[in-house]
Image (cartoon, rainbow, N blue to C red; front, side, top):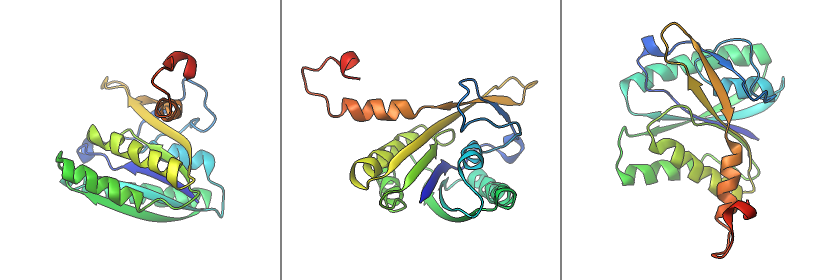
Length: 196
């Protein structure tokens, strides 16, 4: 099953705006003429077909803005679901708003529980505290190595913070994930540039 993983943003509701995300690398799964608050929706729009059933794994830190933004996420997801005609289930993964290692390990365990064998995984690492994308990448490594999952796309939405602009850029950073996986199997004597 296709599993779309994202983190609910922490921005105050007034600052969580619809953004026109440009596709500077002309990646076919990142092309989108409209606007969205949630970059993961661009992947859903370009990879999910009518009638398909998907899973969405949403990490929600225990923070007031995240709870409010989750409601917006669900509302916008419903509009997208109606537009495309897919079915979905949401795995809501609540986590403390904390930087304690125990909480990071707990989040990793919760994320592992959302992955099924042979999942096709799409991830958006745009939002969340700095450790959350690292934890998501750890979970992706687990899914790839031990659950037979395929890591289809890992994207990042960069926003132009110029107040006159409401635009951003979407980048696919999946190659970095696979480069890291390659580095993990190198021998001590390998030349990393040649090996990769």
